[in-house]
Image (cartoon, rainbow, N blue to C red; front, side):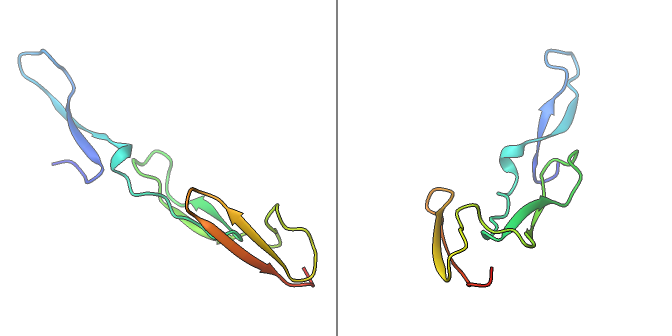
Length: 93
């Protein structure tokens, strides 16, 4: 009766004849995309929809804040728990 990410709830508790409606349950939504260091997460659907849908887009011309411009410097970023990214920056950037 309801969509995958919705719960069926009683809208008039205690009434003689119960009425039901489907309500969004964000806890049932899939986890958002995890993007690389040189990408950003962008929402691609309407914010009125139950679950957000994201895609990863390149950050054109933007370096990670931890990067300083030293030839072939390695940068290690520990983001979310357990997520470690390593990046080699060429001398011309």
